Amino acid sequence: MPGNYAILGASGTIGATLSRQLTLAGHKVLMLGRDSGKLAALGQEIGQSWKAVNLDNSQELEDVLRHHAEQSGPWSGMANCIGSLILKPAHLTSDEEFRQTVETNLFSSFALVRAAGKLMREGGGSVVLVASAAAEIGISNHEAIAAAKGGVISLARSAAATYAPQQIRVNVVSPGLTRTELTRRIWSNPASAAASQEMHALGKLGEPADVANLIAWLLDPTNSFITGQVIGVDGGLGHVLARKK
Image (tube, rainbow, N blue to C red; front, side, top):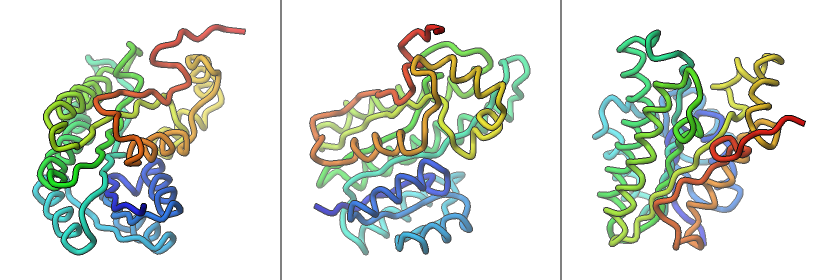
């Protein structure tokens, strides 16, 4: 049955991949993000609606979601694919860098959960957030992003308990290193790519579709008995010790 989905961070690699997948499955998608140029191009490509939003004001996000639902019908689900990457030890990370990391990753997730808690109370649905394997296992120079993504995980578990009576499911996808534009400087460098592959038990890096596939699966109402879960798409990075050949 066709659904109505909102994808926050649709201008990024994973968000765009997910938007394409949902479109091919026959769903309506509202693509949200900061980059209006990328959103417009993607919207034209797949024939879906888009809107640039300023997440410095979370009320703007809620207003956009509310207005779209009034025009297109109730929400089936929402996903936050926004992310950032900072690889620095804590003593070299400035206050502004840390605040920006928390704003980008945790605040955006909180804003989406808050909107879903208001707009999906009648019919239920699925909310999917994106964390990181770095929030589940200690990786050097990841203090800021691990703190922010760890907050995303805790947020999701609490929200899953809060909104379960309204049949709003809240889950987290936790990727390892994935080949996106955000991580290009890592995987495009042969030495750093090789080092990263060795950290993953499967000996390879993730692809955007790997992450998008799981988000789409969690959004699907046929999987309505799953909530409060953190599921890794990480080649084993978060829980499996890599062994050299």
